[in-house]
Length: 118
Image (cartoon, rainbow, N blue to C red; front, side):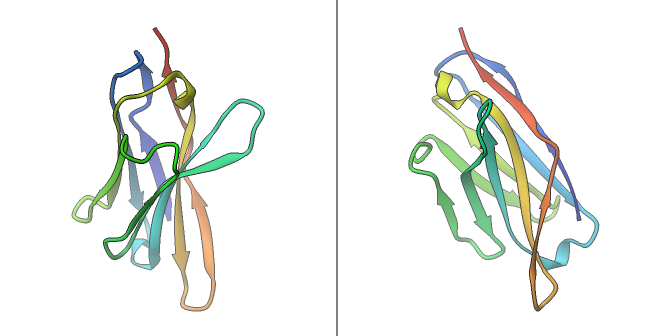
């Protein structure tokens, strides 16, 4: 499985961005796709996730501001980020949980920088 993240950039506080995570390769085994972010000098933190069903989950810090969705025809997961704050500035990564029926493996895309600043 290969993941291609895109959509980051510079936005003013209160603005919006939409991140995309396009999956390719053996996508049938994907159980869920999640977004994480890493602040400078810190480990990656969970942001949002969507399962192969319809369930979604969010970190408390982004609930009501971020929405995760997917387009199965395009094998792409989106993270719509509204009401962005300077503290949302980070490198955002998408992650796929892929099962072979026995184990679950993690696949990561490259990061995309989100900078919220006036």
